Image 1 (tube, rainbow, N blue to C red):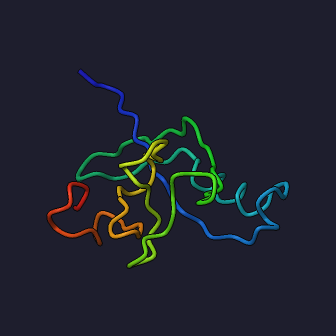
Image 2 (cartoon, one colour; image 1 turned 45 degrees about the vertical axis):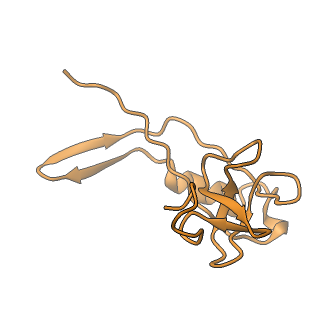
Amino acid sequence: MKKTILINASFLVDIEETEIYKDFGIIDQVTNELCQGQTIQIGMNEVNVEWESCSTVVLDPGAMNCGRCSTCGRWTTDREKNNVLLQLSNGATFEGELRCDDCLPENHRWSF
């Protein structure tokens, strides 16, 4: 018996601020490319990947629970604060700095 699986994938794209709200700008072009139905080969089987939905969020560390890791620069969200962005990697504030799960000390509960 087949089951339908919903797979969410997040992509980060750095663009100029002037492109953010431009009609058919870079955001529209990228989402149109990513959201086309496709067939992919997995082992000996072809699998249809159908577009279901798409959304974009302009990351704003001043207003949202997100920021760049102080060690490696990767986008992350602080899992110990409210309004976690689940699309970003787990992170936490350690010694006053936001760090991603890869850069937190090994014994930290959000360390990878």
